[in-house]
Amino acid sequence: MKAIDLLSGINYECIFGDLDVDIDKVVLDSRKVLPGTAFVAMIGQRKDGHKYLVKAANQGASLIVVDARRVEDVADMINTIIDQYMVTVVAVADSRKAFSDMACTFFDHPARDMKIIGLTGTKGKTTSTYIVNEILNYAGMKCGLIGSVENRYGDHVERSEHTTPEAWEFQEMLTKMKSVGVTHCVMEVSSLGLKFNRTDGVDFEVGIFTNFLNDHISPEEHPTEDDYFDSKMRLFDHCRIALINKNTQRLTEVLDYANDHTEKVYTYSFTGGMADFYVKEFMPTSKDGVPGMKFIFVTPTYESEMFIPLICDFNVDNALCAASCAYLLGIPEETIREGMLSVKVPGRMEKVDNNLGLQVYVDYAHNGDSLRVLLRAVRRICKGRIITVFGCGGDRPTDRRFTMGEVSGRYSDLTIVTTDNSRSENFSLISGMIVEGIRKAPNAEFAVIEDRREAIDQAIAMATPDDIVVIAGKGHEQTMEILERKVHFVDAEEAADSLRILEKERKADLNG
Image 1 (spheres, one colour):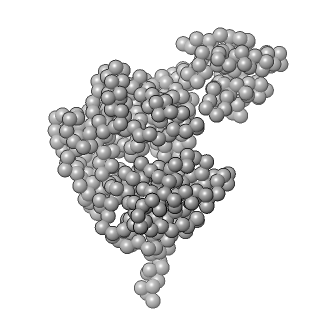
Image 2: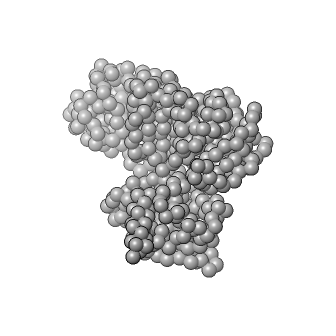
Image 3: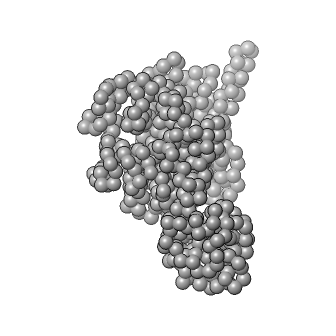
């Protein structure tokens, strides 16, 4: 595609060069620049792409896009490029926005031929997207999935690098989905994805707001709670139908914004009543030997008993969200019910199957709020002890260590503190803070086992069928980072190995 066509619809100033050059890819990372590439210099939170203008030119970039707000600051580099390289340089008002617009133009707006369902919120996005995906596929629709765990369409499955991909990767993925006949796509839309324009140019058929908690506030994410909240609100800027959880914080603000920016607003409420969709009479049960939750799904036109093969009442909330979305998409009652029956979400209360009758679950809960919700829900269905295994990441806000420790101390019968992405920090420092939090809970029992594999082994070895082992913090993650070294480590795999070994040991003991 010619640069002049790629920039169509964008207000720009050509500083130097010929816009009749061919462009075959647009990148934000100067290390990915090749001849035929357009390099967009972005003003990031930690790095500024304008530092790499000369490097991009030296690597053969055919087009360099700079942010007008930086032109004066990088004038010397621009002059160097003009003097030494045959590369076209243009300035735009907002290079991040321009990057998204260029991606949409290059791939010819693939989302226009699909219905896109986007979910934003602090908690519940991943599980809800998986349930929606299962229902739509069961309904005979070809549905793609984009999220924090993986991206799926047709027979293709790939691990995710970002909850919401950068604009170029996002548009390229939608193009691939379209090529295999995908008609619907359900996706997690992160606050950073919205803040950084990654989904610009895409209109959402349904935009869902699951909840809002005071999280992701840090120099690397959002500087303030208002910045975090305002970023999430941007989902409704490009959304036809809004579906909002009435149990969220800042509900009035969410409803006001959605009403001002969408065609129609619907609500759902796990606590029942005073919403378009709600739940009543939910309880833990099993279906065909699979544990889960039974509930009555109440809609504007019918009530229906549903079953979700995921334990804990917060998964009823996720199922309600997904079922409400499916209803708004015109999916029949029976299809919604049947579509839920095969849902399994990696790293979200993921049951680790075994032949010992032990209840072992892996979950992504990685802060105090999410761990509290998780353990309180588990307590209501646990006949024996709750044994919780978790650690906290290094080089991250330290308050999580104290709050997760206190929460686990209060709601677990035994806490095993272990390693979790300690990065550059010393494990003893992290674990010491967690233990300090645990000790705030009266008579809380705990152990500290640095090796995460050993900690999982110990928790499983001491469990009985009435106990529930919760391995928290990493969920679906495939690696663990220690002292800048990443190693393969998946909690569900480690737990499955531990259970297999324990089963062999117990069979050997029985056979004497």
